[in-house]
Image (cartoon, one colour):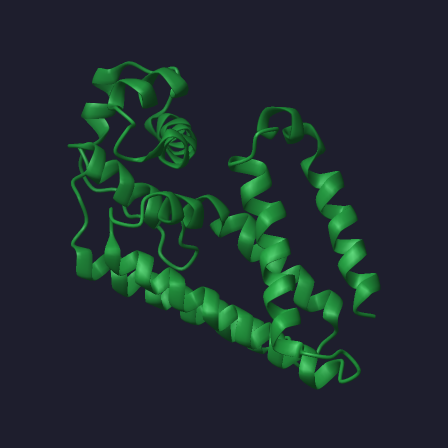
Length: 212
């Protein structure tokens, strides 16, 4: 198994465990067991659990591929992590703003794609708001920005819909719940995994019909 394949396993296992039971409750031994690797392998690749958390955050960002230097990877400079996150959010917002002149279906596509990428990342911050207060603050700002942007789209493109800003909140939260909470943080999580794509298709069609 290559180091890249090991990193993929570690990323998946750590992302799940940092949501439940949470970052502080998760030990490297638990991540090793979930990823079916030796604990020594984790410490060969990462200096600490904090370094692994930073790796999870950076790997999620589409505009900031992680450049692997030498192992073990150390924690990232907090300023760099914030800067890269701001750049990723800015790019996301530009893409979403570009949907204003398009259809509601295009807007839904952009939201579903974004939350499928960021879903676990956001849940880690929601469950562990103090592990990186700066990233948590950026996440809160981004949520508010999404509410406003979707509300503005509804107000402009669907003027017959009352209370567009509140509808914007409903749309964003519903998409996020099905892309993130239902997938990674629900009581029926394991049972639901096989139905994810089909259920999301149903939710998308329901939203499309509601706002057509």
